[in-house]
Image (cartoon, rainbow, N blue to C red):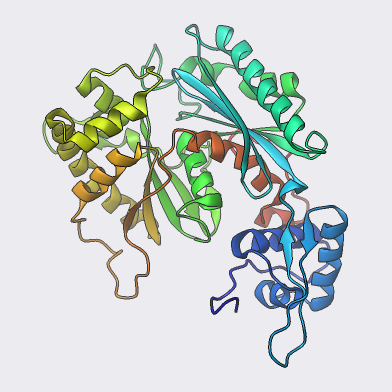
Length: 408
């Protein structure tokens, strides 16, 4: 127990050849719970005290954890808590959207140290890749200036952009970024930065951010219903982000609805793009979120009409996600905060589902991070997770983990 609360941690293993997994388990326990003693870590991870001591000594020598002052409680033995060193690792995250690109740098615990954004020029990757590489270089320079040893402790570059990946709709589909998906983005960014690169869709990135610093922190089962230009669901299942066979898990925006009239994808009816069209707002406007929040707060009748229609479709979406994935909670994220608050209110009452059980401790639906930088934050956190989060593949013999993943 820690301050009366159970310590949350994944189990380590005392078998041979599993030291990499156990190091990740230890780091994850400190990330989720904060400072813990060696005894706390041994109980929570089910590792031997000797194994915990060996790993803590190794992590401390590598500059990833540090000891706090000794704590004395009652008549028991004094203990020394250990915590993560924020400067132990750094990563850069990149969001590529239809009209804007954002980059930011974080430390080991997800604190943002530098950020920058730029308008993405028309013309697809042929023109946009130079803008993106310049943006990454600018954030990287700022990070190195702000944090000692940042360059040598930079673990990778995470990239997030709209999906789905690899299906090729043909033509210039305004709901997809097909030119960017066909472009060798991972290789180009890897060559241009010298960093290991991972790619995930924007909903998965939002879920990654929620898991590190948001409403999904410490949860093993959560679904992040992401409202961006399109709609997606970031799936946290069994404490890990689930991406599916091709990185397209959770593409709920493509689900067809036919409750009123011809069948149409969910994202054509309830996404922010549908709101922009409804309000005749330029999605490339630099003060886009401020405009939407103002209209939502003022009770603009056009906004109210869209919210009422979108809430019905999103209510169905929450029901579907609860039925299929049985999460601890569904988190509405991505939308500006005033709009998100009104949508959550309008979606209630929720449809009956298997989520209605007596011992619920979390709301079935709650708002998440309402920040246009949340996707870039999730993209930046992904390389941290790739380097330090527990993954079952780490204990599968003969299954080395790749340095870079196409789909995170």
